[in-house]
Amino acid sequence: MRTPIRNSIHRESDFLIVISFILLVALLVLGVFLYKRQRLLSFGIFWFFLTLSVESGFIPINDVIFEHRTYLPSFGFFLILSTTVFVLLWPKYKSIALGILVIIIASNSYLTYERNKVWKDDVTLWNDNIRKAPNKARPYITRAWWYVHEKQWDKALADYTQAIAINPKYADTYYARGYVYGFINSFDKAIADLSKAVELNPQFTTAYYCRGNQYKNLNQSWNFEAQM
Image (cartoon, rainbow, N blue to C red; front, side, top):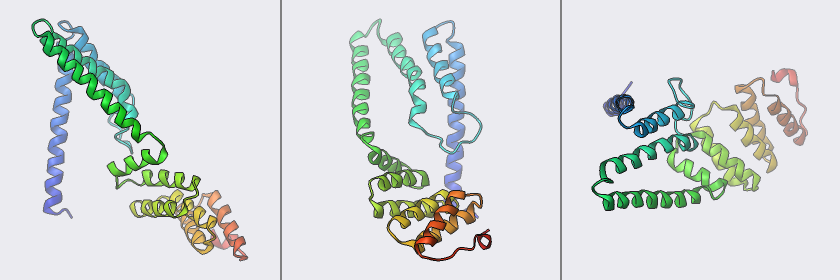
């Protein structure tokens, strides 16, 4: 049941979606309208939509926003921007046009420099992901794997636990955490997580194998048929 606050957020979200759709349609219409008058602007508009359509459409996807999806479309965006500045300002106001272009170049150079800090290594990249999407499990899972590679077991366990709290239905996360518990000799916890993994995915053969090793570490016999 939705609360008044949720209803308000939902209505605001619907309104923004409608406005965004109208703006996109208007931009497409503008591209058609400018086809004979300003071919370069029209080309930039259609380039933006065509290159974006390769990975975006009406079919729902898990990750709506991905940085690499904007690389090719951004060429169309900046072509539109620079062409608009040139068409509107260059004939009479060259100094203003040059100033705007310098600002665009300088600001994008700065943003590129700052973005390189995020891509410094795996942990800085996934820290940025978690900061921007704290309610998604995947960034925690991926950062945890980096911690496993670096043998930072406590941090790996903390991230896997957070990922499970966000999405308790993902068998791979239980498997991964059980794997880490096995490394630090917490065999009971490892068995519990691996059992949960096979409960969620009965075809998870690797989890069965790993659980068998944990039973072996505890010197416990394991009735395979009883676990099926």
